[in-house]
Length: 143
Image 1 (cartoon, rainbow, N blue to C red):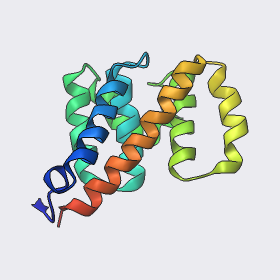
Image 2 (cartoon, one colour):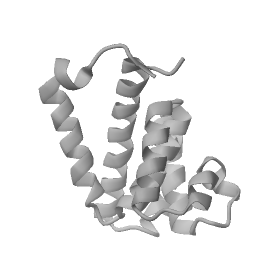
Image 3 (cartoon, rainbow, N blue to C red):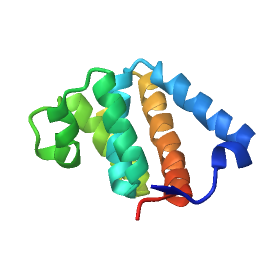
């Protein structure tokens, strides 16, 4: 992997702020392991190989089983995820793909599983990993 430019030094204050947001969200009530699963799924959708590899490694470090990491791409058909987790994956996918028409129904389902704070934290997790994916796709050449 080649670095096209070093965003961490060239845009240091913004990079540090994004990193701080990631760290704050890792301490959310959703748990670091599940955050990595969401980050992995969003990174798969965005085709950010850097972030996919990073969150698979960090997921293992934080106790996520390899079977769950492997199943993330096809979460809807997997029995390894709870209905609450599947609701969160659907939310993450809709936000990442900008499917605004799906938001009301998905939000109603999400609220059946999570508190308002957790919904807000999940939404921020999705927003932050989408930002990181843009950085990873632009700054790193995987070719």
